[in-house]
Image (cartoon, rainbow, N blue to C red):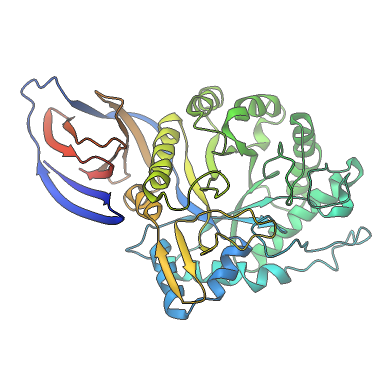
Length: 444
């Protein structure tokens, strides 16, 4: 038995990825520096990886040459890329839009005669089409609203929080269904929707507040009946779509005997810390629900755009912790951005795994792109997480068994020192070392 090891190091601003093979030998009772893999002990199924095509991403993409556009698409969706399967996008505008917009803003148009996807058709839909062409298959798309139209809200604005007016709940549910149907008419596989992006955050950009009870009532009494009426019962509805620290409380407050069948999953973000235990609580309490990471990025307001190693390690550490706690899919935020970290209509700039200098037609793959690829290139949809044990907390790791039986283990070393490992599997041991400040993927 052999293990293929792919290792990425980063020193003095230079990335280096090397591949090598190691032989397993008989386990002669090794006790020190051991990492154990137990493929017969299985946990949740993993569905895949993806990212968001926002208007900002689509606009940036449109400014690049065809050669560079193809490079971006191949990097994410090509056979030699990091093989994304999911796309998230926004219903109407979000902060990563050029400016606020709605598909319809007439309070008297209950028949949606003035409804138009003109803005989506300009930048989002062209990039989504190209992504599917490169992937050679339909991508699974999730739609998330940042705010209802201003006329439906208590503060009369898309921005600054506010809430959905009770008298517009039915109208807004129908609006969401109309958005889904219009995308499906264009041939896209809209499979999932979240009820509200970050329902607990009053933002200077597009936002809308929901209490747990309001989200539950909107789902139970308006959105679910509207999806059913419109023949959209196959749409998977995800609740929460906000940070991890309150996901258990929200899940527990919304799901009961009546609403359980209406909810397919809980979506979560990373902006308030790791909170892996919160994911585990939801997994243990609601074992049949999908737990999807739906947004995370390196915000320039909080983190350095120069710290490529630290930023990449933040991605890998979070992915490992999330998977080990029960996550079923990882969907990153903006798939690409310009060199300023936008465009963003409220200057809420951030990093993306691929950044584009639109003036000079330059594509930059950040170290975070490579780190994500250490997972997404090798973990197949349908893989099952398997049990592991490790000898040191200096090492972060997760392991999954692909549908074909191959085992993928990802090991992250955030320390400066090399970490030796005796990898024990099925009565055999492979010995190797994980360099300091590196990530390693092993395939058996």
